Image 1 (tube, rainbow, N blue to C red):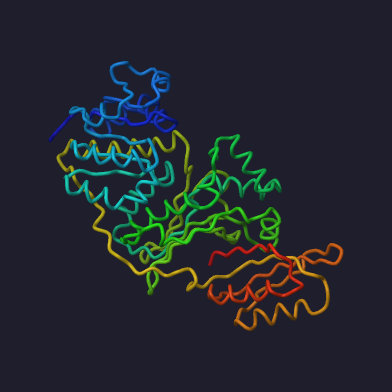
Image 2: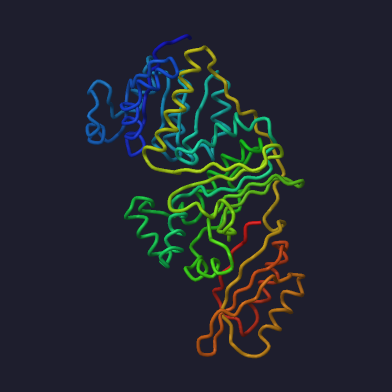
Length: 429
């Protein structure tokens, strides 16, 4: 099928969909010239008619029924921007069944069902493009599939959630509490009305799954990713971290180890000299280590209508080019292989720990015994402040096996002089 004109069908006309339409109107002719294909917006579907009408599109190309896009024989490429699992999954399957390539920004769907959908696309000699599912406008999927294909990726560390990064930035710069920073993020549109997926780390975990499949060529399900959110991190922890040369970030970390893959999402103290430490506000960054390339970092706006729209239309352009030059069906992802996974209890980490204790003789000796019993070596122990008869203690361990640290931690918290509700944060190694 050698086509000079490729028609696009769009499902969803919300923030990102509106951005795609605006960018196509602005730059469509330039994109068409670059790829030698005439791109035409053939149909836009959304259940909300008022939202469609607000876009001031020709009446003949708008519809409140997805089927009008999915079953239109003239539509070559379907863009899915509805989000969530269903009905988005069923719509993508329908698009493939009707012989259409698919472009999606749906991280939840590609994390949970990406392997299944890519396999179906391959069977039908079609393709699914999903650059916009991770990192907004930052090129990440394509470099992992193409630019770094000759290398063996051994590690990736990313700030992949703009909401939590904005929160930590405001907490660090203005001494805000987490609740105050989250409220500000909501007002500015950097956080959803229900930010639980961001705050609890699920959003970052989905993105880590997508990136790790490509980086390590492995089949991954959500249960194999350790996830810890940011709700326990306080402004005091961020202030103390800076005093000892660190900043706090929510990190998504994937590592290929001799024993298997280790995938985790959790807050971490990042050394101030590390490139990720300077990634502020709603920006995202992915730091990749390969055997041959060494270290490389991708940085930019990880969300927003126009940054994400650039990734969506780049995928549309690639799909259109493949149709134009008869190379459709080039699903480059191989069948993902089963891999061994290393549970977090078997990993080595350094830990920051902050707690309150009765300020009386013998407390430090009891702490030393509790850690010493489990062979946990301490890098620093600092008494930060004293209020009445209570002292605040901050300590940082050397590298230690997670399982041993948590045994020691349990013994520490059983000491009568130690108060409940401590803070514990891992360090980026």
